Image 1 (cartoon, chains in turn cyan, green):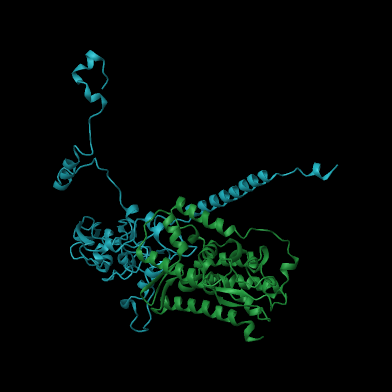
Image 2 (cartoon, helix red, strand yellow):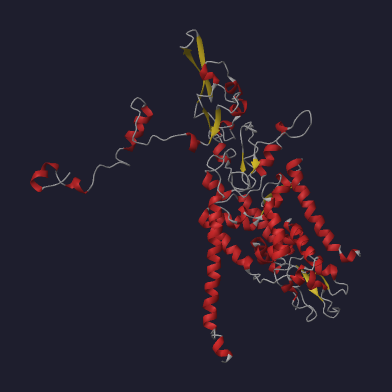
Amino acid sequence: MSNEAKKPRISERRRFFTDLAHHAGLGVMGALIWAGYAQKAKSSPLTLRPPAALDEEAFLKTCIKCGLCAEACVNRPQNIDKETGRPRPGTLKMAKAQDPVTVGTPFFIPSDVPCYMCEDIPCVPVCPTGSLDPAKVTNPKTGELDFRMMDMGLAVVDPNSCIAFWGIQCDACYRACPLMDEAIRLEYDRNPRTGKHAFLKPVVDMNACTGCGLCEKACVTEKPAIFILPRKIALGKPGAHYVKGWDKKDQQRVSERVGKDVTTHDERSKENPMDYLNKGLEF
Amino acid sequence: MKWSNIKYLVLRRFVQIALLVLYFGGNYWGWRILQGDLSSSVLFGTVPLSDPFAVLQILATGALLGANALIGAAIIALFYGVIGGRAFCSWVCPVNMVTDLAAWLRRKLYIDKIERKIWVTRNLRYYMIVIALIVSAVSGLAAFEIISPITILNRGVIFGFGAGAGLLAAIFLFDLFVLKNGWCGHVCPLGGVHSLIGKYSLIRVRHNSDNCTLCMKCKEVCPEVQVLGMIGKRSEDVRKGECTNCGRCVDVCDDDALGFHIRNYISK
């Protein structure tokens, strides 16, 4: 047997196409593994982002993982410990591989270090990519950065473990709140068990609360009974078809909607309903 | 050991470590010299600098970017494109220290001589660029930035190490036992981007074949041997963009046959 018979001859053209298929196949294989990992590498939906962060999806796209926000946070002048002259731990952490957050992106855990809501919001303007968008915390009236417009999450009270709901006096979260009586107010209620004491229940106003987490940090229970969740997780959604009949604004919403977004006309509307017996129409 | 045999090596280590110290100080002591990290930084509190490849991946996700990131990427691309060549890889990137250590150990342990060779194309890095951009577009996440050992090491120094250090160990072992110059010379897409950016830069290594004694020390230490094709044959510049301008060949050459030059685009 000659060598020719043992080795099939490979023409240039066959070599080209085999090579092409080889490279394309390897490329697709690599891309599939990589894309699969990228899906898994996205942050837990419970992640709390810095102030003025874009929606999580847009934030993950644009964050370049430079850490300038975390550096601005830890090195802000008011964070310097007067005794040691050293900065205390900053609020913003840069995610490590073991965190349930996309590696290298900034986040914070309020029970470790809450956000102290600096008036100048140093973490936001330093962002080079716009992942943290100053417009989201700029007061449209004054044109200046306004810490009241921060929106990192929402405080949620667990009434079962909050001792104030048991009738024990505690207003730790109320007093820790930088927007006292706005974001957290105390609701006075009669305690029917004793008949002569009051409940002082903490109630969160979802519009005022910024999600800074100072309440979670201050909470006295073993595991905080008030804690911060991202708004997407903490809030439900009734749907546009539920209308508050007693609310003028909501009424207005409905009257604006009619004729624009909602139509009751369809193909069948061309016919007169009176003819349903004559023409055998089905309505 | 003569100073002329380690000059560029020492200078490179100095630059690499000094940059890490400046970044670390930017976070830890609040120095305003170099803040941020290698993905994006601010020089002297004003000049933005960004990794062009990271910016490219973010653009591939379809996101709009702040002006500072774009300007920063342009500054970096301009600097390496006109002056430095692929110098980022050997003078700035901290992973270079890890893979250089692996390459040095390979030589000392004679792993090159006994290992079963596997062949991987050095063009893999260019395919990696394309795949990274495609995966970025599909997944909505800058794909290389979530696995990049460069930023993991860089951020580790600045903000503290985490489990990502395991990836660095893996790359060290890969370079040591699997493939010579495996990461920096074959896989890393950022190296690929800098090879493309730096191809026409002014600073080049030039070979003078009249002085060459064909000792081949340069080829032994070069992490991108394919760029040294002219050794002993022709007196010319190293033209391939994959040369990292590390100057190791210049260091080891005892015959003054290699040295840094400014490329001459005007005469000839």
